[in-house]
Image (cartoon, rainbow, N blue to C red; front, side, top):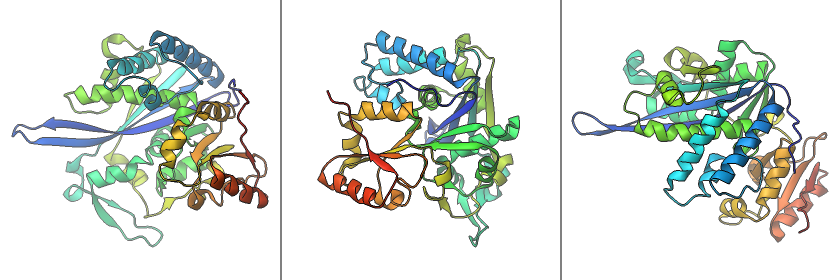
Length: 367
């Protein structure tokens, strides 16, 4: 199924990854530091970018002898095609990164967060304080853990703050753990936010960000200097392999705490975020059986479903009664799809349809 190019014009695709840098100090003690990092991919014209993405993927799959069954892949899926510890995996990601970042008319922004302990009271961060949530102090490590799942939102806020963009399409890889903070309040009010579950497997701009981050992770593990925006710039442009135009490197840290720290203990659910969820959503379900996630990640029809969702700029997620029960099929304008596996899953679909949900069973093509 070919991509329809439903998202034309400018889009911003975000993906993020916590990275761990380890070293041994002068006393022989092993230390580690968690660093939050994200990438924004912003083509001048998204449809043109998708065509270039397709050409690069086609070329690299052929060069590395891989079978390409669909259009868009995440870095982890590509890694699963190589034997364990095969250097070809890192070579693929490096080649992709250099090819895609050499494209004209595409802007890349890198965001990195670490905190300077010297500018914190007792080396701790004060969070919360609103909506009846008492303030509390947390360590830097705990603070970084709290920020990790919302880091795409925080990076989008920083980009908006620097560039002044308004009403742009911001694509965020699906999450149910956006925390209550000023950054989220600003982004949702000023931009067209679209949350897409499994976006790194469905949307080229997010897949690109994901593969670039995977490539960076390898180099960061070997980098001896402190990891900041300048270190990331040096890694990306090593030996002038990537042109420097349209590449931006941003720090998010101590001066931004009032915007990025949680205002309360509240974590927004799918129901809270429903107006920002990209439809249609393709729900996979195997009746809640043990190892359901592993099963549904490997089932034979996976590639057909992912290509279908990609062509419609939809989402894919495993159905969860508790999280999705009030959301599935509740949009009268866009029909969601249900992919049942097993008798219990079929019964669940029948119940949902009896409730007049706007939902259809996804039918695989006959072989």
